[in-house]
Length: 111
Length: 114
Image 1: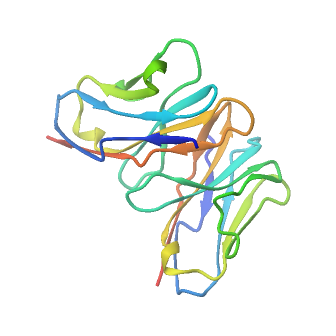
Image 2: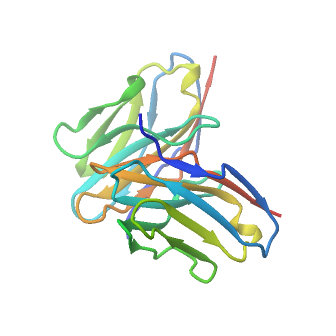
Image 3: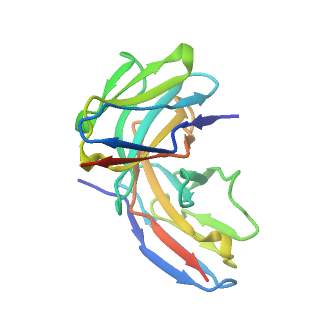
């Protein structure tokens, strides 16, 4: 069964450093989402792509976060500079038929 | 604004007890509804979904949910829980058309005691 791939699975960084996360959605899925999940809370949408275009980034802290999906396939989420409050799980999901399929996530710890 | 509310943050049950987790949504227009489960150390998995039709939806592992439009609710049920159901459960909703932005509830941690 096809899955959403994410890397790295874990990342430890110091504040003010740059970090990047990668996501490869299920083949053929045009819609890709990045979520942030803080411990004890539900996933919060950061950015949503339709093919290579951003369709919703209203909750993305654009002063430090950026996301791209240049060829409409895989995607990268970047944080620069990282802050202590960015420690969380970063989830990627892709959609088919209105149903989201999630990757395993990248757990980020900012020291 | 679109929102999903889960009223039970932490539920503890004994094995074989019945389960009902509450979920209410606030959405304009036609809505799609979901329940996801996150087992310890694993990623989010879809339990069941409602798009249209029969408001009683059956999912995997014996779970079901009922869509009650008049109450804006989509509660999750299971007649007899098992220790292996220990997990966190998330209710989610999306608009049924357009770009289908999905909003999640804050989750309910279920602990099943053997």
